[in-house]
Image (tube, rainbow, N blue to C red; front, side, top):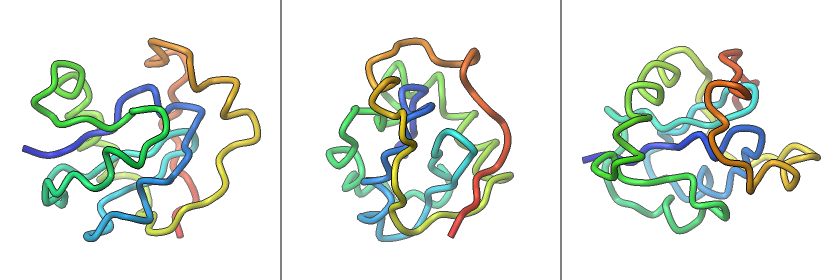
Amino acid sequence: MTFVVLDSCIRCKYGDCVEVCPVDCFYEGENMLVIHPDECIDCGVCEPECPIEAIVADTDPEGEKFLELNREYAEKWPNITRKKDAPPDADDFKDKKDKFPALFSSKPGEGD
């Protein structure tokens, strides 16, 4: 089992999860974070930190849908190990549903 980031993170990127990860397995895209499933140690400390519940186990039906997206982009995007400010319009997007693929950007973020 591993944890994955769902599409509800898109355009929010709050980052509370990043600071608590003991193995630094978060990667940053332009408008979303992902977890590298091969680096995640399944400790689960990130899950309750996400204010919009965008992190779930890969065994969750929603998690299964986003496992490969997390894996693919964790290989392409830079690692992030510290929380950054959320985008200024994050609160406008936090309650939106079904953000993927319409709002998803495959561009990398800045990382640390």
